[in-house]
Length: 326
Image (cartoon, rainbow, N blue to C red):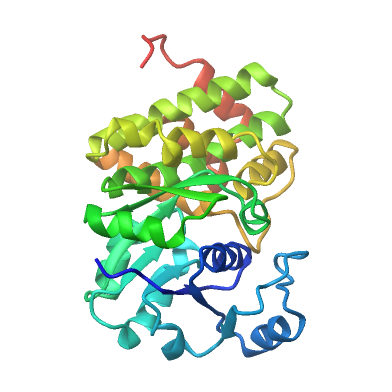
């Protein structure tokens, strides 16, 4: 397979900027695309993104609001939030060369359609080759070159391997996989479960409760993943258990922080809501369609919708019938 020499990152938030730094560090020609011209001008002038302060943008990194120019890259990384991915890919699609790899870098399930991220790409850009990047990482760590390992999945193993080689470096280590659904379910479900863990911390329920929520949550994630055809090794790997552990224990996680705020009795923010808040109701609907029991995730969805108080959710979880581990 021809080596990929250039990368476009669509979405100049913190995560998109971090991925642009990753691609530049790997020796690729990089274009960071932002829709807002003023945002582009500010980054070009300062060589810094205010959404990721303290990170100097490589001098060779091009910053542009010209989507056609960005689309000429060999690889497109879509770093918009999950609920905006369809719009971003639809805008990009008319300018893409056929068979260009388009990699979703968001973790979620589309509201309304229940589509996973690679399914959205396949619909919005039929001539593209969909892939998904997921795993335990925070934008600031990645941008600063701190050691990070993630998973990159595509249907074709040769493509997945080539993408890994194009983006990998001494500090950013992607592992390739063909288990697209396992990577997508792990990334989406862990955001919901991180909210539950944050609630436990915010309510000061103790480390034992946080550990129980994390492990029982992983059991839910694994049940749904296996029912949807995911492989066990993916679910216990970086994009499943690894990502869950990270986001269920770190205030850097927006989902965990949202849970902490709810646990403290604060209302959820109206702007920039964490991905898990959008994913929760869709995840529950998907689980119900597969007849999969996900009580922790269901409690999170009920709390977020206002259908259940936190105290009622805790009582409901603690009074469930005793059962065997699994």
